[in-house]
Length: 368
Image (cartoon, rainbow, N blue to C red; front, side, top):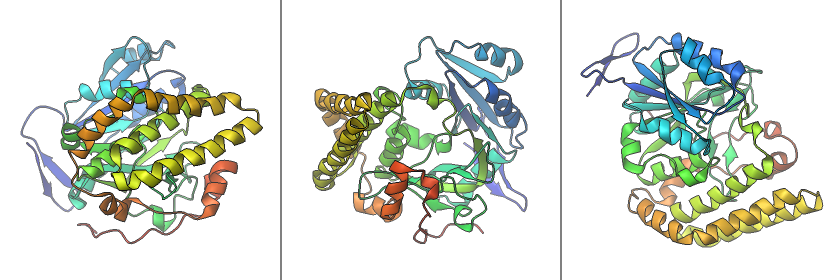
């Protein structure tokens, strides 16, 4: 295997085999033509060169893959004949990865030239961490943050930290542990993959990163935000092609399944009823607004979980068998409760209008 050696400039890597150290996995479906050039050109400019690109053709039909094949021969193209969801594409790409570290990047992303070098340095400076999310900026508004990752809350909703906030603020430019990442720009070790796997294919898409990070925490792998590596993302650039009632169905379905499989029983007894009640209120509000398909999507998601309860029990046994950290231990660093104004802005305006709380002091890490 490889080992890290520190010098004054960077953490250099001594090679002991021929496989790439880093595998970059990116699924592609459609409507991403305008970002492809920026994506590949930013990879070509990387100061760290020991990586492979696995580009997944997730049933696309817009000709972009032909463009990639012709102009970016360094990409290893893996093909899915029919789009079976975001999750299937990522899982397939990762199954072809050879690297010790795996980076997930969306196709509507471009990265700074020292992105990979700085990501690997994170593992030297915070050796206790296994998963990192980078600092993600908005492509069209580069002085604003797309995401710094998310925290768990007592309501069962995720607290998205840093969204739409000024990128220069000090609180967004230091590392900290968090509950889950945004997979538009993240890295994890092969050890995590070997222990817990990646995503469940039946998730299709949405909440899969949160479930993955939750399972990683349970198994004793820490998740951190690392601002030293920077990606630029077009928020919702490709996911906006899906109808919102379709998204709501998978979002609620996956969350409920994840809660049932990951949390300890004592927390499930109050979490799941509370979460269902919250969503029933949302469903009724949609009915009042005439959004009947939105409301029905939650009903369908609930029915799916009832029909697949045997699967829930099977997965729950598998997840709990890996448990090294209790819910209480995970919440120590992964849970932050925002003020009530956060939920007001989340559901009625934009969460960028909410002023983020200062986080509890993070545990010390090796580094400056």
